[in-house]
Length: 191
Image (cartoon, rainbow, N blue to C red):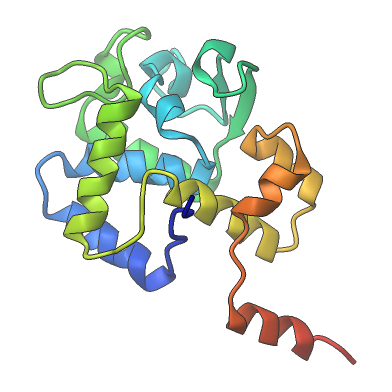
């Protein structure tokens, strides 16, 4: 089975530019950022509620707890919200007045004002990547981007595995993209 493409910086900027001119731009951008900057699966993103992401004061939480029922492995896990993701989520929350919604309301809603399913969010990602003209990208591209970026930043394999919610290191390793430039840079580090 062919793996989802890991986006380059140029690809990522193209997707964000395409999203920026669309209807529901804030929602679509938030979904992309949850995939790319938190490494979440589409089913996990679709299952998020307002209360999962926001405190009772309407502020973006530092950590998002994914319930066991919403993860692929059936085990709860914590997603850490970095500065870039926090800013993106705050932008979305402000644009849609999310803090006024009840905690059990879906964090991302379809145009029909219902919760996304994993499948409908997967279809949305496919449309976003197609609009940006990116071949080979899928709803899993953000997750692969997240894992690859961490690996190439020198983050420990065990930490990456835990953040990704994988049970086995071999699974995490399959997500990491390697290209010629990365290999050249590695060899240049030799004394």
